[in-house]
Length: 257
Image 1 (cartoon, rainbow, N blue to C red):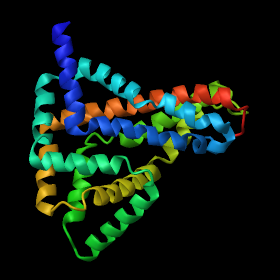
Image 2: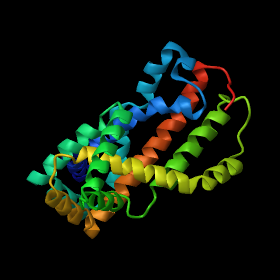
Image 3: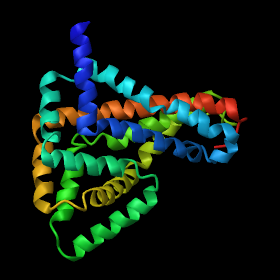
């Protein structure tokens, strides 16, 4: 038990130093998207919406879930490698910028500013755009982000259907087929969004600093850490959306999708 407790302490420090804890906290901001995915609005769920969504997306609960998974999957070697980089002066500045960006509630304003920065860099022929694209690819090297988002949507919509929120039952096979048909379009949209987001997040870093970050992210050990962190983040998000669907059913009668 003593070793386990020490492991837990190291993992908690890992969440802090890498900024992964804040990334998990920011999942709560996605709760507001849930009604729109059902063709509804938060107002349709009455005055309880805010309280219930905060309960479901409780940040302490999500961090506990992450610690449980990481305690079984993240090796000391990989933890140490990632923590060492993020504890460096550049790493800490990056974490500070990433944490601030994660918690921006007005995503559209962030996207607009990011798109303007990308357009400016393209106009100047700046290599920065390519570096930002490479950074995004490095944190999703297995290209799973699109499939993961689709899986979250399917799990949420099916949970909503099973909970009786929708007037008509959804067919999971048909839902997956429809998402598959729109996969290329979604991938392009997510790439554009990620590029604008990166331009916004890293606007105060030099090209040399971003290149140094890219080299750190492309290290095999860091790649393993990111694949694991992505998997943890997506699983927690899917789990919370499924729980939210069940709670939404308590707040409102059925609606058409």
